[in-house]
Length: 289
Image (cartoon, rainbow, N blue to C red):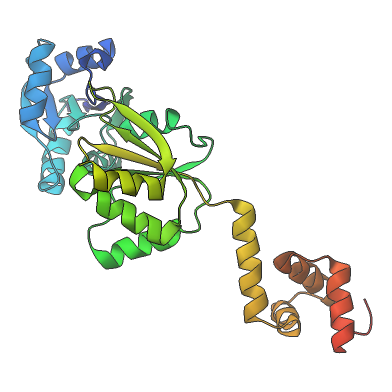
């Protein structure tokens, strides 16, 4: 029985061909087959680096059936290199499915690092980088998009989105209505001739977009919600929804004793435990601490 082959996930340049790594070139030359999301774009890259490995199309519309075929080839001993249209495969592209199937079949998967638009935009955006979430493109279907945006409203991490130029104005309008006027960095045409990184606000970006037609692919890096403001708004929601007595009762009915419930209520409402006790005394619902 032949030894299993390997799946290599090979990052390719997102614009500047000088970002191709020596290792990526070697792996692509040594592989038995290259699974490419866009064979027409990838052939230009292969020709530039004098790579003659056979190539097969692997994209969104054949990702399941083709992944099964590629897994069979690797089980038979072939080594396959997966490349995306540009950047790192598996990030918001069909490579994700191939990786899952390969691992389930016991096939070794190896990342070959390189360019990634989301990471490069983040590090050059001027936005906080310690904590971030990546949402790729917002869903086109309104119901699903609204659900994602509802989650992002309370996201305290930096948010990274992709967007095409013809949809940028609409997306900025939606972001302004949903998230409010936050700090945003628009990173355009990264590593290419007309690369631009502009830190501004969502409202200002929308205004500029309406004055000048957007060009090139965009990565939007958006400031997360202020954690202190989020906590304050949640506390206000609790205060407006429940009376102090109802709030206490909810915790006590969950199994907390009186003192534990008082401590939890104080935290929720941004009060001290003594203030909660005093208010409960005034209402006549508590006679001892």
